[in-house]
Structures are given as C-alpha cells and as structure tokens.
Image (tube, rainbow, N blue to C red; front, side):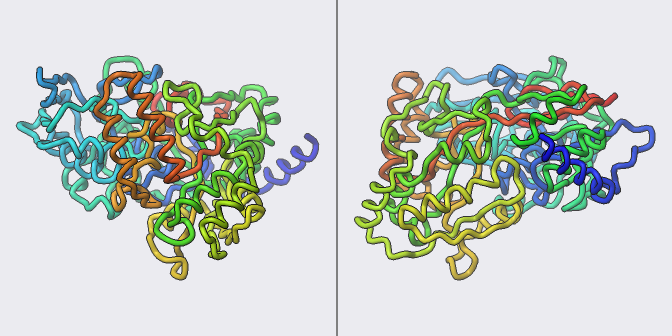
Length: 526
C-alpha cells in the first residue's frame, strides 16, 4: 500500500499539468469524468467501441430501451401494436421531440436511422433480413412489415449495446454506414459541443434544455432522462494512477473503471462511492480475423482454443476474484443459455492438444499479428497474457502495441499483413450484448456483413436464423447449444471469462444509475 501511495503522490504532482482545463466552470454545474478511453470516433453505428456508445447515450435517443430489470420499455415510442398475423408492426412516436438543431423528430428520420443501423449491427442485420417494408406513413408513424413472424423485434430495437439503434436526423442517417458521420446532431438529453472537442484532451456536452423526458422515473436506460447538470466534461487522462489521484483530489467526479491494484486505496477514501453499475458484467473475447493466414484455417483457430488458459487472463486483468468468474460458455454464466457443451476441455492451457492441431493443420510459422491496446484499464494485459501461451503451443507471435482508438480504426481494415493487417485483437462485451446467438456480434458469420474479422459460415447463419424464429425457451436453448458446438468446429472467437467493473463516484456527485451502459443523465453535482 505504501508503494501505491507514493506512486499516487507522484501522479498528483502531474495532475495540474495534465488538467489545465480543470478550473471551475463559472456558475454552471459541471460533471467531470475520466473514462476508460479517449473519444476519437463519434459515430456509434460505424464502430462498436464502448466509449462511442457512451457518447451515443448522451447525444441520441432510442425507440425502446432496457430498464433496470432488463425489460424492454418504450422510449421515443409512445404506443405500438402488432397485427394478428404477427407480420405488421406499427410504432407511434411520442409528442414534443426535437433534434438539437430545432427540427422536429419524424418517423422518416427514424426509418432512415433504422436502415443505416440495420446494415451494420448484428441483430439489426438479422431483423432486416425479415423486413419487406419499413416506411413512414406519416410524421409520427413507423410501419414495419415482415415476411414471416420474428420473435426478437422489440428486444432488437431495445438492445442496449453496440451497435445501439440510436435515432438520427434523416440527412445524417443517409450517410453510408461504412463512412463515419461528422455531425452528432441527436435528440438526446445532452448536446455534443463539437467546437470544444479536443481529441486527446477533453469532450464537452451541454444540457439539452429543449429535451422532453418521459414521465416515468429513470430506470436503467429507460424512463425519464433528466439532465441534472448543465455541462459534462470527459477529461482524457491516460494514466490510471493520475486518474485516481484526480478523483481523490476532487478534480474529477467519476472514473468508470478503477484498476484492481488501486481499488483498496479508493475504497478507504471517505465520501468516494464504489459501485458496479453493470451488475450482469462483461465477457472478455479474443477475436479472429479469418481473411488471412494463419486464422483462415479453422483448425489453427481450434488450436488457439486449447492453448489459452482463461484464468490467467482474469488474474492479470481483473486480479480480484470478487470481480471475476471463469466461464466456458459462449453465453454468459448465470443467463438462461449458459452451457459449457463442447467447450469443457477448451481454454485450460492444453499445450499438447494445441500442438497436435497445429501439426495436423500444417502450420507453417506464419506470424500471428496480435493487436495490443496499452491504455484501457482491465484490458491492457490481454494480449500480453496471450502471447506466451500461444508461443508455448508453437505459434509465432508478432505483438503490436497501440492505444485503443488506433486499434479501433485498424481493426476495420481488411489489409494483408504486409500492409498493416492483423490476425486477432482482444476486447470485451457487456453480458447483455452476448445473451444469445443473434445478439452476439462475434457469432455473426455472414461474411462481408459480419463485424471485424469477417467470419463466414453458412451453418452458423442457419442456426442463428432458427434461433430467431423459435419462441419456445427449451428449443431456443437446444439451438444455442448447437451454435456452441458449431463454434468449436468453426471458431469465431475465444471467450476469456466474465468480470465486473467497479466504478468510482466522487464526493460531490450522486445519482449514478445501475445500467448496462454508462447513463449520466440522472447524475447530480453538489
């Protein structure tokens, strides 16, 4: 503890230099947060990056949202109905909604937003494959016609994680989904101050004084989104020790991820509140790029599943067993679809089996390019743990270090290794994002339409379709287990355990809501 205290003392000396913008903001109430990543991409449809999702929840609104019991509730929608044949859905927007530029929110805007989102998001793609008509009969009505009944309509429209179906003006939603938007006009409780955005330094949001919240109490990501501060500033502090020092000195009001080694020190501080806002937790994953050698060969990817030891990743990145659990299920442990079927002997460091599979595959020593994020608390030791495990099994590994936002940009490129390509990267998903085969982005195996890594497997897609059509829970679970078995034969990613993230709220801030994502609209500043 003495060593940590000395490190924080040194860090405290640097705070003033790193936070020249930390002076009080006149008479406004200003909430200052230091989050897990810098914001460099403001398009939550183009990227699945968590920091951009957090940005999205401040700026945009959604048709539906999950409450604190993970139940789907209407948000921008007032009423909705489904036809007797379950093929036509009609959604009526609530009154009084406007975009940040003053224009009214219309159904045409929402239809354009759904189409752009549906071209990128895993659940959106699957829903849109069943849609024969998506239209706006009038300014307040969205009409969706399906070719056959689909059991996941509301859960898809209310999904809480990337890519979230955020609504945008039609003029912005007309942007090609593979091109980043540059205009962050939304209808949410805060307005993005683009002129004050300084990547590598700070992001600023102002209270949307024209926002009309729902009448229900705030609950999770649903209910009345009441902006209780005038201004939010995200201050980018890349060093975790300096982040904690700033919190303890009341220079920031919130840290979304408290590093395990600094948690005991923060817990001792009077008035600092530690909470796990996402009780369902998150799942670590290693994602394969199947476009290039060596991971174009499923057997080589199978070797990885045997070579990795899940517990080592959890110990190195979380540390405290109070906040993690080993889980060999593709779907979260504790959820209805939890099952280790097909994965019982994986992720335990079976070097001999990994070597056998590499030999059978004829692995020729092609290096694995592992992208290693260096600046994301709780994630910056994932690639460094994987490297020796893979090398022990016989892989040649090229570990390339970079900040997370650089990785986010690079993972979208399909370039060969000689032109800056990649073999695998590490990330995590909220448990609510990986609850089933349709929701789990890394199980999307629709080739060019799949997310970064571009997995391509007709059998997986057939099973995902079957799950989407099924309504019987027992039969859904049976299909999910078939997905697990197929993902052993055709690995798309390696699940590396579950964890929870402790968040710290400063002495002057209250009202942070339990939620699958960071919801700052209910937070007050003394």
